[in-house]
Length: 150
Picture 1 (tube, rainbow, N blue to C red):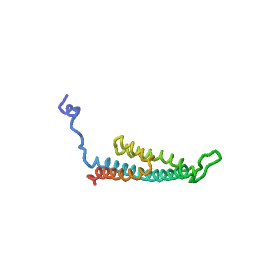
Picture 2 (spheres, rainbow, N blue to C red; picture 1 turned 60 degrees about the vertical axis):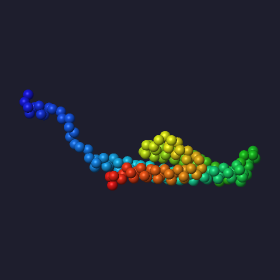
Picture 3 (tube, rainbow, N blue to C red; picture 1 turned 135 degrees about the vertical axis):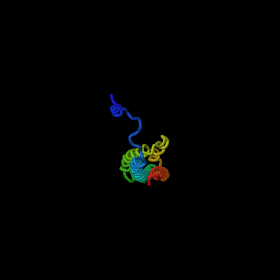
Picture 4 (spheres, helix red, strand yellow; picture 1 turned 45 degrees about the horizontal axis):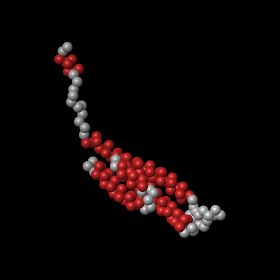
């Protein structure tokens, strides 16, 4: 074996290229875009879910407390605004939960945040309050992550 053969068959332990900040930048910007999209979807669904929940609460108050719709022959309270509100809120809440999970997993928050976000869809007015706080927290985190690359 000649010295030239040794050089060709030897394995180098040195890296062939050095990672640069430019190579890492697309990953951070892609994450920031994904997180921004998740945040926007969450905000929209939080407002829709909150609005439907307030409508559902108004319906329940009018129906059961004030008996504004009257009662049927069997003594059951009749819907005032319509029974569609309960069905719509139920399905909208499912979509809201999907957006909550997407935002939670994208931002890698703790489990307690997931529970509070899920509860906000069934506690009246909580979705509006929590949406504002979550938006501020998430936006700060997205801006901090994407800031050095800008």
